[in-house]
Length: 260
Ligand SMILES: NC(=O)c1ccc[n+]([C@@H]2O[C@H](COP(=O)([O-])OP(=O)(O)OC[C@H]3O[C@@H](n4cnc5c(N)ncnc54)[C@H](OP(=O)(O)O)[C@@H]3O)[C@@H](O)[C@H]2O)c1
Image (cartoon, rainbow, N blue to C red; front, side, top):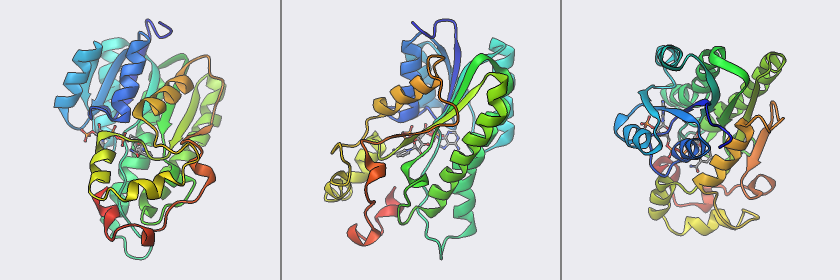
């Protein structure tokens, strides 16, 4: 029980079978008390009951929500040891015709969210505390049709590295896991709309399978552990997909990105 007595929090954990949910389960499995948050409560409450944690509503893209969550944790637990920001969402977009609202939505959830989380949670961290953000392969390997999402995640990669140099001397580490496709129930549902694209993607992954939510959770929890000395590291966990090409939109059924 390497996290016995530790307080952890996971942003974006309400979706059963999703990455945030798996991260919370792994942390709790190692003995941490986990404060789970997202915008919708029913899944969160089920998860909190299952792992003996605490559920708190929090939209990570709204700074007041994140500040209120920090105040709640401070009052209830006094401190934090582990912060994991898994909340994030793809937003279909192209360089030349993305409405401002789409850019703002992608930026708010995928970049402002991790920024607010670091800003408000780090002051609660005890010695050896860490922050781990779940980024995306779209941040390092451009995926046509995902510019707003990929650019926001790339900004988050930079944020992670800026935070690492600012917070390292205080004894904290800040890192990112960079997944390729993760086969969550939502991705399974998406692939069911066009089963032929499963192979289009998988043939570009050297390990010839998608990540599971548990693959990403295990990496995030390792990065969050005091046994990990990484700081400012962007860790690709994608079966080697970052080494290969991403399919172009012309290889996929028309309009498929908007179904993500
Ligand atoms: N799935 C993939 O193939 C894939 C690939 C690369 C990277 N990623 C990244 O991995 C992370 C997890 O993705 P996932 O697909 O596994 O998602 P997931 O955990 O299945 O679901 C997303 C979670 O984020 C929460 N969320 C969404 N917007 C939020 C907001 N504004 N504030 C707080 N919580 C919010 C959702 O809950 P509510 O709706 O209740 O708020 C849900 O619990 C994301 O950062 C994603 O960008 C995913």
